[in-house]
Length: 223
Image (cartoon, rainbow, N blue to C red; front, side):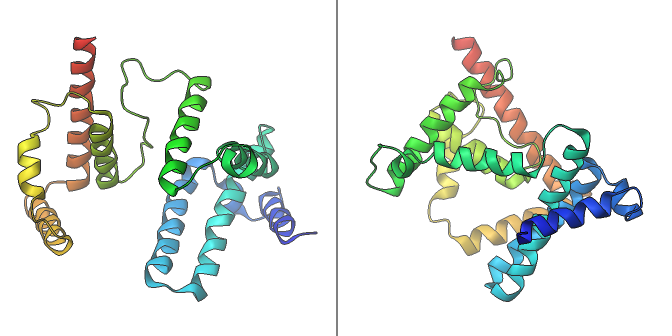
């Protein structure tokens, strides 16, 4: 038996009728916070270069994957092997320059090919949201990362954003901006929001969603 097999057997035992009451009560929804916490703790070890504790935190993240897979195995929909098989197939499919005949000369070319392959996969997947022009983003993505991803799409795809995003103001703010200054300004905005009883995470998320809707409306009007 491999170590991963031992781990899976332990999870089966914990979820058994005579196993752990807490583990048996958990659902995908109740485990979301656990997953976020464990990933955050893993990121902390990476930021600190703490390799000794990174091993432990990787295990804590891994058990979350095993936990979710076991819940689905009990429902008869899929199991851990299916999860591992799917991601392995995806890695092979998205690296034709390693496992196929394609040739690339740089990391930049790899990313271009990666996006092309992902676009082909999306065509074969579920239909996109009606009127959507932005690439689908994880709903749980932190607001700051969500806004950054939307800005990236605006820049890359040249969406019509006049009247929605003040590009001149953005350019002025970007001129000479440095990481330390940016961090101070963001911190002051968060502190000011707290002083006013406002939710900065929610405010940024709502504004970013509004930008997306306005841009999509402009694209639809010009079609």
